[in-house]
Image (cartoon, rainbow, N blue to C red):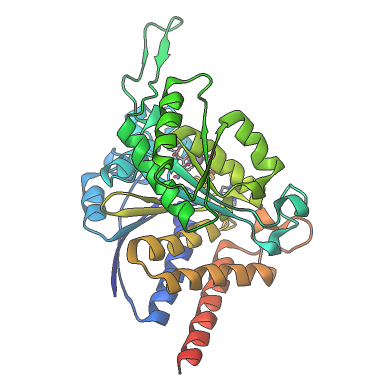
Length: 367
Ligand code: NAD
Ligand code: IPM
Ligand code: MN
């Protein structure tokens, strides 16, 4: 198969983790006989510096002409005081919208080798396997009007949280369909005791749930869900929620399983899927070569699975990650006091080696 991808390295640690993810992808392509066609484009602060636009038109065109997009991260303190549309983050929000990527899948899976990394006791976190389904194109992120208005000293800021029934219905269906292939539980997270958006959310999700009688549907207020996520993370199967709650709870889930640097994501629903780690550009560690590339690498697994239906290839990447972790490979975020931290590049190299080993094992099996 020919895999035509656009790579958007972005800012901060984005290029560092993306480089390793591409090396892993190349190893998978070599091992399974696929051909990679990659083009790299600018987004975020990197694009602002060159083109004064966080999402230049040729980046959008390249993404739309690809079969999938792999993104590192955007964001840099250098642009933190820019007007909204000239911030790196605006580029990310626009590419999500351009690609119609309304369904953001953020798995949080606990690796048995990382028992000492979670701040939670092993018996609490062991077995955690959550699929966060975050609505990605609605809510306060995109609602109009939005503005800061008035004279200094008496300014007023406005954001609008907005959801239509059809937006809620389509993301709810994604969650129920995923649950059917998992443990058949959906927990819908909202703030229906306060927000109209959440009351409509709960009503529509309940209605969609009737089409999936085998799935056990629950509803939880977001504050209570945040507490349950640390108290009983293994209770969760599919966690369905709106844009901002999903943003917050997914970082928290990263903490639960040991590091935000482990989490991958897929943003799907439109013609071209967008794959990116959950973490940001991490300016505090950028340029040091110490970032954890596994979130980006596991995003490659999601890309293979969701954009190309290459399940064996996706599993190969996931197994390789699991293997290197059980062999004790740890970047600084995971090393703690018990392990010697390895670099971003060394972690990538080990995953590549493990991919090759898994690949040659398969070749032997089929011989
Ligand atoms: P962040 O996710 O970049 O970092 C939070 C903390 O986690 C930092 O201490 C960082 O060092 C650590 N961390 C994150 N990823 C890591 C990795 N792979 N390995 C090791 N440690 C890692 O969040 P932030 O600091 O709040 O935001 C920084 C910038 O990133 C901001 O400009 C923000 O808007 C942007 N951001 C972008 C995305 C994205 O592009 N998808 C996501 C989140 C934040
Ligand atoms: C994420 C990020 C983005 C979001 C920001 C950078 C726009 O935090 O992907 O989780 O809030 O969606
Ligand atoms: Mn986030």
